[in-house]
Amino acid sequence: MPGSWSVELVRVGAVLPAVLRALRADLSRYLAHAVWISPREIDPAIAFDGRRRQYLATALLQDLLDIPIQDGVHRIGIAQVDLFLPVFTHVFGAAQLGGPVGIASLHRLRPEFQGDPRDPVRTRERLTKEVLHELGHTLGLVHCRVPWCAMGASRLPEQVDLKDAAFCESCSDTIGVPADGERM
Ligand SMILES: [Zn+2]
Ligand SMILES: [Zn+2]
Figure 1: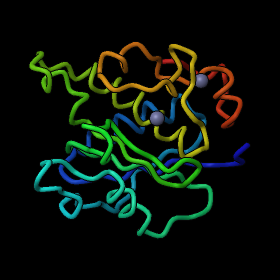
Figure 2 (figure 1 turned 30 degrees about the vertical axis):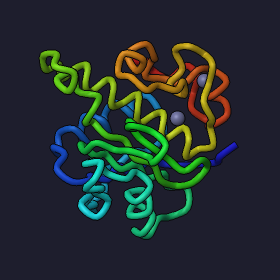
Figure 3 (figure 1 turned 30 degrees about the horizontal axis):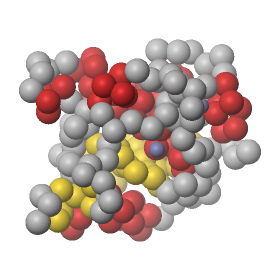
Figure 4 (figure 1 turned 135 degrees about the horizontal axis):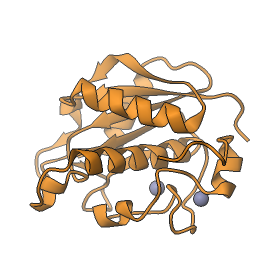
């Protein structure tokens, strides 16, 4: 079981600072571990694939790794570009399993991406769930079969909506998050 750990959020390109502040508030209220916003930023341009017109998630993970990182820090990049991995049409995020870095993107989580009206509350909830999911991978968690657990796999925003912004008891135990943490 991981010992003491903390979460560092890093802006990746044009993401409003308010998005990271809201995320920090949501995560620190729930996790009972320190969460802070890095003064560093990552430019996603080098990860752009001109043929797919998307951004290669693993290239951005490498960029996040290139900034020196202290023991126990789990660094999650927050992007607003369309991420992909070669075998998938798109991903909401990606992470190193048991490694220090992950990334999540708002791009496809926004209801307006599917032509629905803007819904900042829903977008914020979806991003929080997706960041918890990628953070869980960096802490060694694999996909979970508890239907509402944040570690459930999702390929569509509607599937993200079915999850809670929380880990199930077993996943919570594994990573040292209080199972009775305040739920949103
Ligand atoms: Zn996953
Ligand atoms: Zn779980």
